[in-house]
View 1 (cartoon, rainbow, N blue to C red):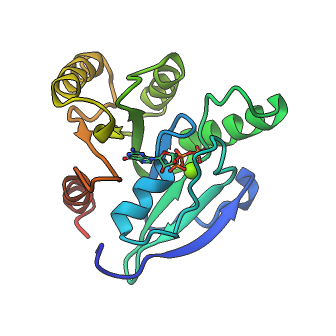
View 2 (cartoon, rainbow, N blue to C red):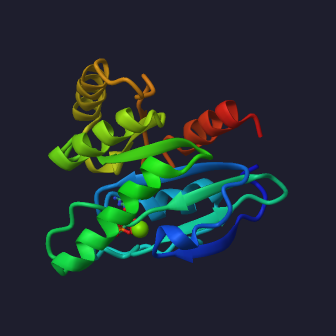
Length: 198
Ligand code: GTP
Ligand code: MG
């Protein structure tokens, strides 16, 4: 699945233009700059597939990427919680992200990315509450694990698991990754293969 050439499918800015809800979708959500686009590139082994930037707010649309010969789609989402962007723009992205997450019938799992240096923030908890309510299974993926010490990472993993205990739709496992160092990428691929059976 991940050795084959993934391709860009489409970008949309509003719910009315979403592609037909066919096949299985997996979305990558999280705060701005957490590493969503970079992780998609690491998973698919295609560096330039999703556009990345050190400036938060790079991804401004829902971007769909399709797996070759398989009805599986990755959705790269605009990040939330980016204070410096124009307020109306942020509100538009956030509304798009939330309505997509709440209303997409073929959305099989959401990988909710959390920066290892920051842990769960208020807006991450809000996203989790929305997904609990929508009964969409979400799994926490810690990113940028190369930026902190292994002992700190282990503590964050444990704390995050505790925070997930009371959650209805949370998948009870956390995966730590570093797109930079290729850490955890194979684990995440294996997890995807397991629940999609592609
Ligand atoms: P938005 O599209 O703005 O929501 O951001 P995003 O979540 O898609 O983040 P993006 O993938 O563009 O990455 C943001 C920055 O983090 C870039 O400078 C990446 O190079 C960096 N980054 C992403 N993953 C890692 C990682 O695993 N380790 C390190 N050190 N940096 C990373
Ligand atoms: Mg992005």
